Every structure is written in structure tokens, then in C-alpha cells.
Amino acid sequence: MVVEKKGRILGFSVDGTISVLVDRRISLVESKEHECTFNEGEERGIIQIRKCECIAEVLSTGCVVLSGTIGGGEIVLRLLCDKDSLERLLSLSSVEVKSIRNYSEVTVLTPREEEVLRMAYELGFYDSPRKCGVRCLASKLQVSPSTISEIMRRTERKIIEWFLSQFYP
Image (cartoon, rainbow, N blue to C red):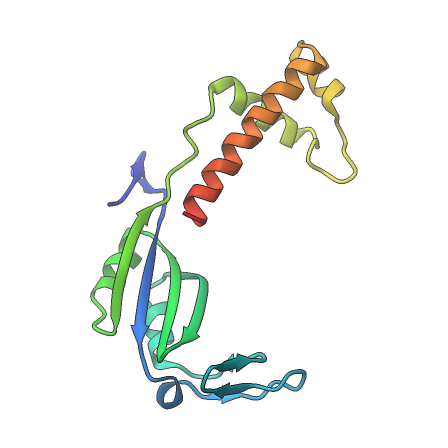
């Protein structure tokens, strides 16, 4: 399913498995800092993929790799795609799609929460060091510092819950 707003794609992810024999299709390059080993039951070190036709094929679709793992003769990728990239990805015979999930905008925020969050960001509340604190925000929005603090906690909690549900289901 694709989520659209005003004619543009908001995005979604594809979790897919590319079945490939690691020793036949991926050339491993030894890292100067760490030993690379792929003995049975043991995977350690850093690998650098010099050339892998299957990954190059996936990347040619326009998808962005969020994360990946190699093991058991498979490369498992977590991808972020727009509608066109997804269609190109699905046309590849080397890809087995495990699941497709929508990434939607955070619509759980009230207009007031969004206003406070936007102002906090623009005024430097999240900068280090802070350019504007709770009292500064309260003054700009003509409310008490305790009200701003409550709105910020509620807003941040909603955003964190949304993030965790999207990226760590």
C-alpha cells in the first residue's frame, strides 16, 4: 500500500531477502583493523563488499538500504522505497519480499502540539547549548512554563512511540 499526500509519496519500507550463496557472489576484503572470518557458527570482524551483483541490482532500483545482515546463505536488507522504486524492486527475480509496511506522517500530534514543537525547534530548544528554554517558549507562546513543559513531554512521547512503532515493530 502506498500513502500519498498532495500527489507525493510519503514513503514506506520493504523488508526483503535476497537468496544468494555468500561465498559465490560476494567477494570479501580483509579489513586492516579486524580479521574477517566466516567459519561455521562464527561471524566476526568487518567485511567490505567490493562487488555484489545482487545488491547492485537492488540499489539500481532507487531504494535506500536502511540496514542489512548476512547469514545462512542470505543477505537480508531493510529498504526504504518510493512508489517507482518499489515497482522496480518487485520486478526483480532475485528478490523475495517478506513484508511491505507503510511509513506515514506523524498524524498523532494536535495542531497545538505541532505548533509548539515547530517553534521549539526553530528557536533552538533542541540545540546544544539551548538557545531557548522552557521559559523562553512559554513567553513566546504566552502560556505558563508548566504548560509548555507538559505539551513538550506529551509531544515527544507521541513522536517516540510513532518512531518505535515504525522502525522497531
